[in-house]
Length: 458
Ligand code: MG
Image 1: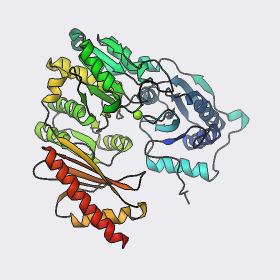
Image 2 (image 1 turned 90 degrees about the vertical axis):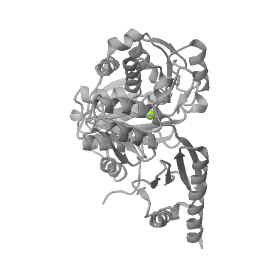
Image 3 (image 1 turned 120 degrees about the horizontal axis):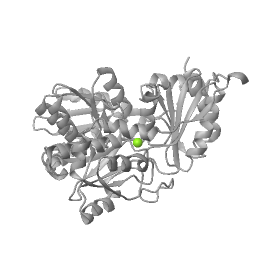
Image 4 (image 1 turned 180 degrees about the vertical axis):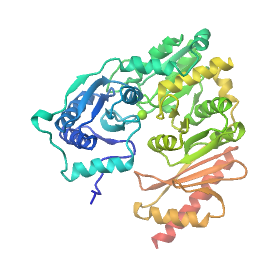
């Protein structure tokens, strides 16, 4: 009988340092992970958070106690550690990171031998071991060892360069501004871009786990300085990474910040030109723009639930080579089937060099959509029933119910209605060719939801 208690959320184990996640817990979690890997060989690394070294030591103690050997990398971008797992033929990795969460958080991500985070079934095994005291304690003579692993970032940078035309990019002498948000994005991307012949200017590139420059979640509202800098120094583009450098948000030479769907659609367009008939994997939260591009250039869209692990697992199962998310996650399978900020940056530069066009022009050529968001309060205990009723009412429409309800309409507008996983609300995301239509969609479907919620209350 497996435990119903949970450690893992949608992207690993996360919590407030020394409140929800303590080093004592981290030792036990390390041992539970070590028990799962059965005396395997694992990589361990961490992002720039102040609590990173503390949790890494605790997790390593737990891993060694259960008989696992550790190659310890230290501070590194998450995608570089994921690449190292396959490059060194390891059984997996444990990454101490809370990605885009504020600095007072940290977390533990577990990676399988393919470089992708564990499946939910595998996580349940670790949770069962942790909560039901099934941890393997190795004999004194079978404890795991820990050695330092050097050169992970060198290998990672070299691997990315193999997927782009280095000399074509170098000829253009692009000036790129990089904002790693005071975290591990500083360790690989500036170097990669210099090796691609770019002139690199950095802001917020000093490593500081208090994240003084901006929030580790790159959003338009905290990238204003970056956008102004691009214009004032006349750079060709800017890029901002999240806390563990797997997601990237781009700013064009005019200082315009572009959300992830858009840059993903640009990568998708150029990928499909060279590789028609390929599958493109993306969550239902992505813009119709991604589908427009697939339709126009002969690709096939595979919609998934929201979440980067689902995208990676789906790509692996279907042998798909490209995936992307609206939040700036680009998954380039020929390199690795996980989101990777430095790889995404190299791909964008490659497209600019190949087409000899400015980023604003390349992104401006893509179909334009307006987006509007809304929310409706709904008690957690009736969320499921509400979704059933809503699906029933809308069954005549062009719908996908893989995650909430997504509806596509004839006029290219669309709406996603999804229960929040953390708050007692339903979220609505509408997009259309005009602003009026997005507002009308939000109003129409908010009122449909409210009617259903009220009918269930009485
Ligand atoms: Mg991240």
